[in-house]
Amino acid sequence: MSLPSAPALEPPEPHDRCARCGRPTPLGVSLCAEHNPGHLRTPSPTQVHGTILAGVGVGFVALALLANYVLSGLGPFPTEILSASATAGGGVDLVFAVTNEGAKGSRATCRITRGGLSTVGDPVFRTDPMVPGARIEVRRTILPPAPGEPTWTPQRLVISCT
Image (cartoon, one colour):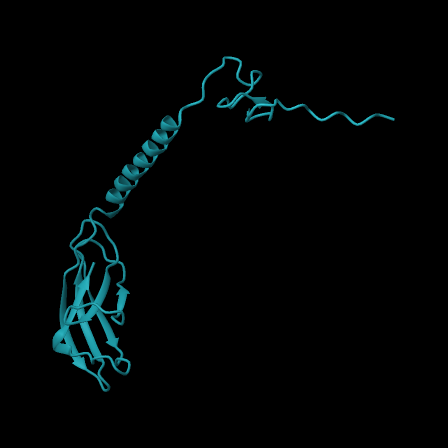
């Protein structure tokens, strides 16, 4: 029968612990002598935070370069209303043309507004894919507005595509 081992004696003064094995170390020392035989100092908080800040800065620059590469050559997408006629209840049957004047093929995101002022109820949609220089015709029926909202007036419609 074996006797239970005695608990490890802790130094009476305040101390830190080794980050690898948990042994007591003097305050401000993160590794014991076994795990830090060269007695290298730990980096200061300024060094740690500076390294993190530099990494975040490099990340933002990399993200900006990636966005510039991905988004360059897209658009503009000028639009032209070909026909607009009112429907019963305040809606509109609409035909308009969108041209891709960019250097890359893409889809345009279009918003139809009443007089150019955007509201939550404006129809927003994406066109079919367009190659550079392509012009497509889009047909849309704008449903009558909900009660309390203004009607769609064909002469005041504004279409913006990005």
